[in-house]
Amino acid sequence: MSIPSSSWTSVLQDIISSHNERHRIATALDITATTLSRWANSEYKPQRFDLIRLVQAVQPQHRQELVEALEEEYPDVHTWLLDDTAATGSIEADFFAQVLNVRTTTTESLLFWRISDMVLKKALDELDRNQLGMSIKLIQCMPPSSDGRICSLRESVGKGTAPWTADLEHEVIFLGLESMSGYTVEMRHVINHDDLSKNTTFPAYRGKFEVSAAAHPICLEGRIAGCLLAASTQVGHFSQQRLALLATFSNLIALAFNKNEFYSPELLDMRVMPPPDKQRPIVATFRERVWEKFRPVTHGQERPSSKEVELLAWQEIESELLKLPVDASTSYRP
Image (cartoon, rainbow, N blue to C red; front, side):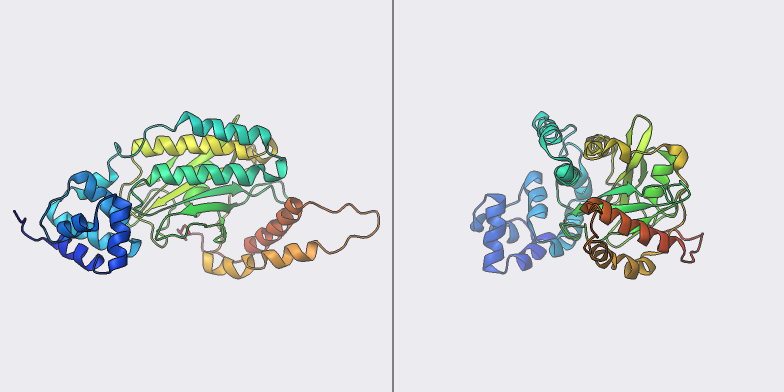
């Protein structure tokens, strides 16, 4: 018996009007193209689990339209997608073993990149299992400036699912008191906001695609290296279960740092950093600065390592940014 057509089936009909897309989605769902067409034609009614997987399978540009259409027939569809029973409450022991193996067998020059890459990928998989859209970034404390104080943080590496790009490393920006990350590091505890479109009691900015966000400090023996920052396209995405997972990943990613990259909280003196559009032209000079510092050294001089040269370039950029005029009332977060 046919089921009366609904809004979401009409949306699905449009999505699978392409032969290639119909077969791609059917393959992703492990069903036949005929079954998928019958869903779209209201001949069969898929189960809740099937609908969740369907939302995951469609292309990102169609996902929001499909979810909104599903909401007309299934008012609690957002609850399905955010249901923490779909997100594991713990991380497999094998993953901990993999991270520990990398920590003990990787050379120092590669350690940060290997562990941060592993942990960020896993965090993204666990915190955005339904692929609704998330970014997760590792935010590092800049080393103390000439006056011995830590004045800012720097976005170091990041991963994303659509609508963000998969690799967010190129989106480097400096953060300070105006940001959720700066506030998290200063307070040294987790910060969570369910809806960035509403007023907050702490600094936060609704950047592109961001609806909710959470940040957790990265600490060791009372000292701090930065924070792990996650943002979602969904309201209220960071439930207590997901915040617990974020805390675990923050503890894991601490293994990527050398002990001297954790700083005493007494050194923190966060400043308000300029807005991103003012920063980007200066940040864009990073590679040029690194190249200049790699010019041939004179006889007897020791050539600095790549890490040392890059750090010098970032410190130069931070110094220039701190000299730019800022509006102390600015509340934003890239």
